[in-house]
Amino acid sequence: MGVFQPEVSHDSQSSSRSFALRLKQVNPRVLSLAGVISIVIALLILLYVHGQSNKEIILVIDGQVQTLETREALLSDVLAKEQISLQPYDELSIGLSDEIQDGDRVVITRAQKLVLTADGATKTIYTTEDSLGDAITKLGYSLEGDDKIFPSLDTAVTPDMEVKIVRITKQTVQRTVNLPFKVIKTADPSLYKGDVRVAQAGKPGAIIQHIEKIYQDGELVSMNMVGKEVQTVTKDKVIAVGTKAVPKPVVAVATTPKATTTSKSSKVSAKSNNVTSKAGVDFEYKKMIKNVSMTAYSSEEPGIGTRTASGTRVTEGRTIAVDPNVIPIGWWVYIEGLGFRRAEDTGGAIKGNKVDVYYDSLSHARNFGRKSRTIYVIGPVKPELN
Figure 1 (cartoon, rainbow, N blue to C red):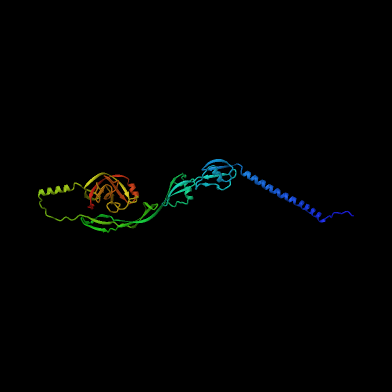
Figure 2: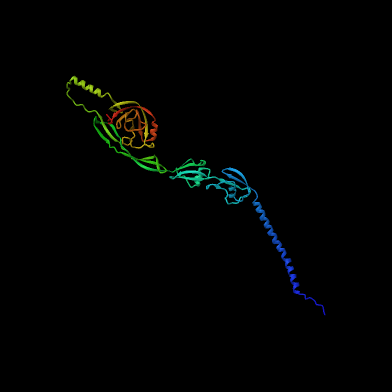
């Protein structure tokens, strides 16, 4: 018998060689991939460890600086651990959810409360600004024209500060003031004594005053005259008074009883006890007051109107303010150095032997100063020119 030879398969030997060849080709790729994965894992581990390590940050609260060491990653966690609370209007230099890094500087600015009154309302507001001017600008408030703010804009903000904004508005209006004409008497040698004639008819005038009204938060607080102009020129009434001597008629001389003559002489003497002559006018006065203190006033002053206490309009050259207990309202007086004036007004400071003389111009009134004069109290009728 022959020897049995095992059957050898060529396909099996070929498959083994192919697997070995493929394994030899794949191994370097697997090793490279495994190496990359190992490096990534190592980096992640290092980053985690670094993130969990101590970090030092600088914390500034309202200018107070402190240094903190922490292992926390977020600012909110750091503040919670340090028991630092925040109010709704406080400001942070970084967000609460931001991740902090070693060496970071975190600034916390506390908001201050202000009580602001403006435009008819009072509000409680909060600000982190240092000056009042920056605070109201950031809050949306502005000052226009002549508006005022208390305290001033450069004031440093303090807790619970009370702030008031006053809105100032101005309005200029026109006011017409009538000016009565004066009666002027002049001597006329062509007319006999006792005769008069109107040389020029009088005509009242008018001026237009420009009045500035000032309002604070809609309420009128003051009025000032900022200008005036003549609308109609005043024309004074001129009366010519005769000075020519009247021819004396020839009359028979009659004998007068002595008793009658004596009586008439005594009557004239008694009548002329309080008679004087001033500015070419002879007049009888009720009383004479010496050393009267005199000042002056004007309707251009704030709060002084053009209507007197007696109901007339103030008129330069005529109106004076008096104490009615000394000089009755409506009576005429003669003031040494000034002439005839009429008591038409009163004043809270006019008491006793004191008189206030009216002038249209405020500068003239101020230049008048204080004087001392003698006054003749005449009565309700102004004396006529002789």
